[in-house]
Length: 273
Length: 273
Image 1 (cartoon, rainbow over the protein chains, first blue to last red):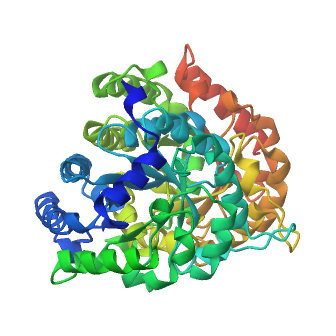
Image 2 (tube, each protein chain N blue to C red; image 1 turned 45 degrees about the vertical axis):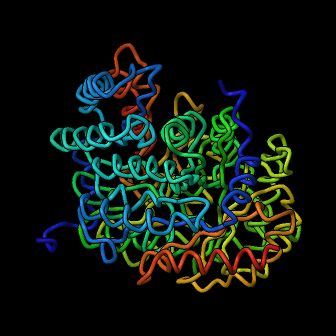
């Protein structure tokens, strides 16, 4: 069965081309936006998902907002992922897990089975925390996005520390990510191990693209967090499928979520061409 | 109501004294040990928990193993936490979450309400990823254990990188943890912000204790991972309640889990005196 599933990098490149979009709909159902309780969150997310899907290539549910709903939230995020797949979207489980070997394998079982095409992973614990995700993903055409340089205000405190060898700590992470991803490069030149790099630090993008020439980049931080699509050009150097850009609040809170997603789609398509 | 709850550092010190134990029972129900499916895992965990509890001060469910069971696993870990509390144990949610501001607040709501006394947190994303956990915990007598130097083989790859200022990266994390914890020190001299430091690197313990004089240490890695209780003396320098030591496989897989926990309890009590 599995031999029919292309590697994740090829699936991503094909999906971006087929949908002419690099937009990832972030589903972060903050109760201040979505209402509270599983039923309200379900209705809100399904409405946004169906509205924005035509302009998107993927959806990224942020697990925290579902976990706070307890067991019903866990079921809900799976249901929404199934709906997203039916709408033709890739599904990225934004769980940012990171734990040691056997535990990482358990998370991989939880997050890379069923309707999830890729998962976000925290690299702080090193190779034995990341490789179980890669091992699980690789055989079944799925992918892993490793946090490299995040988009939040506090990211610099520990990620930007300068090393004795002159690199920043996040650059050392990027070099590891390139190593982890090397065996998983598909025919389009994209690996099944990608990286999360915030749109809020566009000045780092060119350097990170050099360190990670085959990594799909998952870029959060446009819109509400201040990142601008026009600054993301270097991320797309290897091709239009080489980066996907997540927006959540700017779409979820828009009066017309479809129009907000379509506007972002057009701006990204322009800058990536 | 909340003014009657002592700060977490005081609760921890009191619990260690009352139970004459620093043993944390790690509940990591790997299906190769516990059997598979929610019912088998529930029966296994409840049996181990009731057997080992008299020799322990806390229990630490590892969330990965429950999440892989889906929604029933999420309900199960809450049920086990309630049982542990009835048995007089503190409950530490070992979830190692780390995400940006508003998302961290959502995780804190999921993991620091109900039956959980403390939670493990990944610091890679910096202050705005950690402070929402601290803010949630502090007012209600709960605690946060921040990953500083983990016990796994790959930990050194990124955590031990040498910085331009001569520190190792994990030492920079430790310095941040001491800052985050300073406002939460209780009458016993212990903060509500602790640190996770692996027993597999005992040579780092004295230095980390100097950097974090008020931090309760949560120490995994004894037993199956190779750490020895006899090497943990520096962790207890501020007092017997200043460190708690997690063991999972060495208790869960023992022919007599109660005896295994009791043996560890005695060895730790000796070295901490």
